[in-house]
Length: 401
Image 1 (spheres, one colour):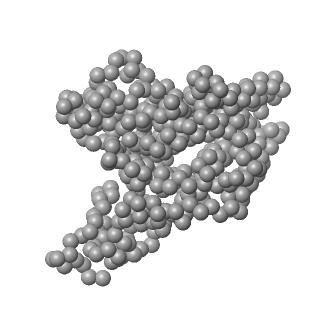
Image 2: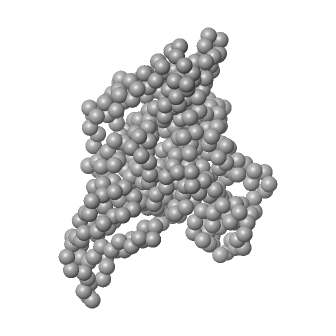
Image 3: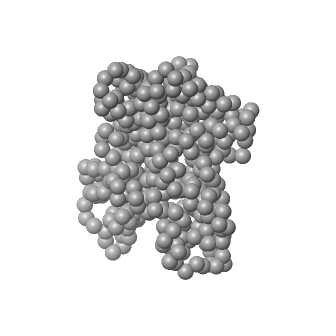
């Protein structure tokens, strides 16, 4: 195909991590480009970028559940979980039991993503059997449905807006707001984004944030939180007496691994070096998917353990796409093939964790050290500089009022 003539201006240029991709001219015309970043695809014919409405419409075919495949993923995951649980409880070497316990934690993470998709209505909707299984999982995993749905639905409606981002998400301050904050507000804010909060997510996010806090705030609305606490501490007390080793390897360690991994994945999906935020008319679901949600590179095994949640930009485009169809949607929707990426490599993890504040002048997230070295602006320089999203010690689980 010939390049553009003098009269033919590029219809759209994307700059993705230093790479420029040009898509020429008139609507409907195509050109072959090689997408070198992100997941590897063959050279594809690429049409001009669709507008937000058309892209949402184009995603709908992938939101069609394949019911037998949903059951297969749920049943096979439960079988793997059951097998690992049996090994953990057997009288075999501690090395084998410990490795099985770690693997059990990763499988619990996968089951959480399946539970997450069910709550979105993406899979097994209307099935009484699935309803019982998912409700039981939510209670046993100290992630009861009532608080999860309220906070997570709010997160999807407000992902990466400045206003409302503290509900169902990690809180965010601008550099200017942090400079004006009291010492107490700074301490609470720093704590809410500290890696230790994520590492101890079993206690901080799930036991406290998903169960205790909502129950105290609204007992009638969150009775399932009371049930989750009762079941959990009942199991802890019983196993502590009859089988302390099983308590550690079958309950505490797997839940700790799943909680910590889940907390970090949720953080890195919306807190990464090239994230963008929208205010007012700047924001829509497609903006949040393309600019405010990451693609986390992983190997095939980790994609299995995490239920493809690394394809998070596709999930935020359309939350009704089943997790097992997210790679397919990314491959078929040209606009989703060049996401901003991060990974689970130590360098990328550290790079994400050091991001603490939004710098309105630079238009990006910065560390506390970078913020301290930057000359503060006045509120008149940018009206959004006065935005203060108040810190929340249980950021992921805070329910909408």
